[in-house]
Amino acid sequence: MDATLLIQTIGIFTFFYFLIQIFARPPIKKCCVVGTTIEGDKKGSMTHINGVDAYISMPKNKSERAVVFLSDAFGLELINNYIICDKFAEAGYITIMPDLFNGGAIPGSLMSIISADTSKLSLLEKANRLFKMVASFGPFTIRHMDAAKKLPIVQDTIKELQTQHGITKIAATGYCYGGKLVALMNQHDINFDTSAVAHPSMLKVPYDIERIKKPILFNCAEEDFMLSTKAANESEAILKKNNVVNKFIHYPGTTHGFAVKPKPNEPKDAMDKCFQNTVDFFNETM
Image (tube, rainbow, N blue to C red; front, top):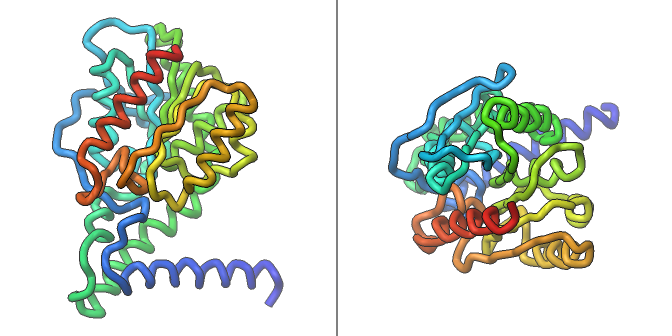
């Protein structure tokens, strides 16, 4: 067996071991696919940007400011993301959420599968749940883990806002997967004015942080396997040293994902506070 095949084999076994561990214990609380859905209806509409589906939500009054909403791995599959977009529109921003995953986002129904208590399920039922997870996570991991490949979608979205809607000021907000994209936007020639991330994933600290140049707000969970408190503190020190406008807000009692899909045991107002803090930061820095 050559080295490449050996590495691939180890990777596959590691992936399946992780999935088995999920279903061998009580419901996990920190996974990025655990949470609840928000009650409500969409107020915006679907559009197409250079062949990519996108959700757009318009404010009541004409606006020259916009929010590019860069979602978590659930993308257009989760009602929560649409409702948050609508809230940004209510705050006065034209808001667009492009489909970063070309129809291949993690299904919203997976949250209930993972969150459920499996201790009383039969082996066959556990195997069925495991199969559903593999069927979702496997293709997603292969196709979408290189977030940099999504930057052309972001660029096209911004161009659409500028040419079709007369936008002059742009904020980027990224949740989980989308948080990595916000960092990458700073490393490429992408036109935006300010940004915010909530429990960002896959950040390379210090590398990604050292390359941030635009104003940025970090909404940090108290417990986050993707961005620990130590990593957040290090990031804050780097941005301060580099004279980048920044703000770090920590939300007690929260875990990764709280700003989009809060868990029942988390503070009920944490998600709302995170949203309002993001709007306030955008208003201050645009």
